[in-house]
Image (tube, rainbow, N blue to C red):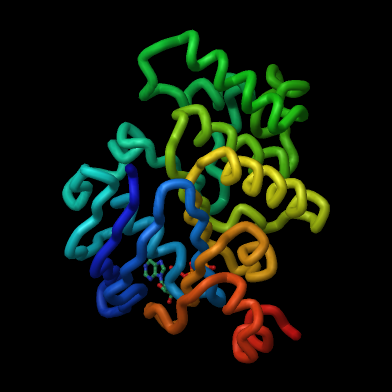
Length: 236
Ligand code: ATP
């Protein structure tokens, strides 16, 4: 089974420590959240996991694979999909081309076309706009495209960085429903978010990051009832 186990992950930008000795586990099909304020170190943690920023780490394991020294661009081959903060779609390419680029690691075209159909079923608007340039899509549609593109590699675990950023409450609900469905269907999720309410709806376990360290962790149910979390992260 493919459990992700991250141990001792740290990120330093020059003299700034953005993340210090972070460790967590995502079991197969589990949904884990990392919440925290702006600048707490969430994005750095995810980027470090993907090898996109200089990091030190004791170990990263995914099932039987030791990924400690595997470069980020190869993570997709092991079944790890990544939806970066800010979407990063290819604006000058059509929607469908963007999606097909997400499947570059898959050898068999038939499976790719099936996955494309699944993405269009999840996000019908992407099917309707398949020939439009990605740059012409709204922010919410681009977020759907970024998630769809990551799904095209048929991942077992998907890492998402702030998928709710800049979206209307209605679109956030749409993304929540899709993530819940994908998780019910067996996809593991690691969700980084400033939006704690959304994160508690999608995940069963959560870490709270503050100033580069894990300040709290527990089940999402416990954390959503914690007085400090309610005050600082839920504004209640
Ligand atoms: P956000 O929600 O704004 O993305 P975050 O919790 O993801 O916040 P990070 O973006 O990981 O936080 O930032 C953690 C710390 O590292 C902050 O102090 C930030 O200013 C700093 N930082 C992030 N990226 C860099 C960089 N490329 N160079 C220098 N410092 C950086």
